[in-house]
Image (cartoon, rainbow, N blue to C red; front, side, top):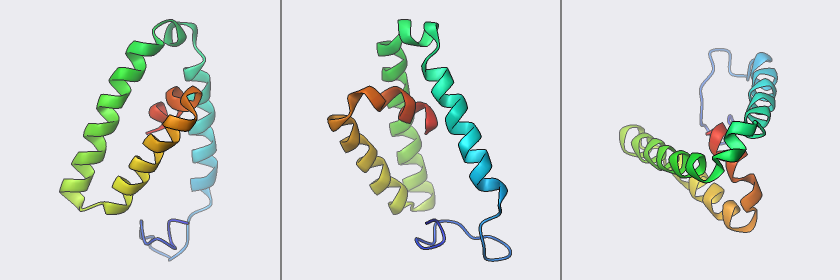
Length: 95
């Protein structure tokens, strides 16, 4: 998908095999993190801080690197949160 949208460039023109496994490991670890007792106990505070980080991160990349695709996808994630609020913690920690 990243090659089709010209998001990244790779030296040999294809996506290295380790990319898929590392994404799976990161998502699995973030799922575990989002289920920790201390995180769930402070869920509202954690989500508010992650929204602030998410917004700043998106805007910095947009203005520094002219990342329109990242901005559009971030807005799509925010729309997703309107329909699926239970996924907020997982998606915000992945960003």
